[in-house]
Amino acid sequence: MSASATENIASLLRYYTGHPREVKPSRVVDFKSERQFVELLHEGAPVVVAFTLRCPWTKRFDRVLEDAASEWYPHIKFVRVECPKYPGFCIARQRKDYPFVEIFHSPKQGETESAAREGSVTRYSVNVLPFNYDMSPYGFREFFRIHGLS
Image (cartoon, rainbow, N blue to C red; front, side):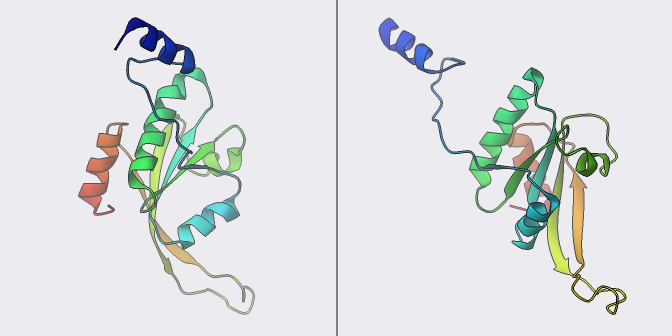
């Protein structure tokens, strides 16, 4: 590649790493509400939830999340929760180390309790797996393979 082509690419990309990156639409869903999250769970696909803080140190994590989401779309959904915007949802997870990832999967319609009081409420059983593998597309691939989610 000539020097002028390299300079041209470097001027187009904000962070030039030596390899041009395709700009694609994001496959990571930004968390808007618990209702939206429940709708994603009802679709039946596993949902990877990244609990993050938006800061310069999480740029690499965001890039990894984007790469993993584009690799497994549409079979596995990826959701980013910015915890300062939605503290109630994050505090309920009872973790203090950010960023962290949890995988929600296998929603099944459960028995409703006290149907007289909660006639329109449907309960679902969802398994939550903490993600403790390498924070990379390879780590996600291994996790999905071991747990049979791919």
